[in-house]
Amino acid sequence: MTENLNKIYQIRFSGLEEYRNAIWKILVKNFFAKWIQKGSTVLDLGCGYGEFINNALDCERHAMDLNSDSSKYLDKSIHFYQQDCSKPWGMSASSLDVVFSSNFFEHLPNKHTLDRTMCNIYKHLKPNGYLILLGPNIAVLKGRYWDFWDHHVALSDQSAAELLELHGFTIDKRIPRFLPYNMVRIRKRPLFLVRLYLHLPFVWRFFGAQFLVVARKK
Image (cartoon, rainbow, N blue to C red):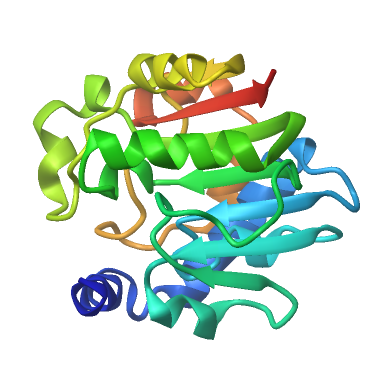
């Protein structure tokens, strides 16, 4: 299973590491940083090659992924957990201020695994801690949702929000259309367009195909 995961990452992201890191540097600085306070403890769940967590500065950083190659791309100061996220986590309960997860939940094998993962997230977040969830919206993408071989669990912004509420979260923000579907099978675009896109929310409804849900632990 881990071997197949390594191959998928290599096929999908090889040669794009520098570009993807530049994109995420902009996304974190210009958008996601508002939920990350200086000195907070942050976990990147399903961290991939660490594009988000490497660019989350001035905080205690943790990352989790089943892919053994992930550790090669993470800053040395990041605590890395190579494990199944639905199994018990090797950290203290109520120790995290923020859990961030981008384009990950849809790759879990089934809803039971996702449900157990949600239990772990809730357990390890502090009261009023944030879960920031980004993912492809099946309500927008329809059949294109399945263009990736390892997509298993179909989610929309509404079903994701309902899942979070079932696990005791309060929804602070829900955006059905935020970022475009992916940055893998498209040509590289000038970075200034990413900054411009983030400052033009009315454009998101035309190009956005990933939802964003931000929730707090009650």
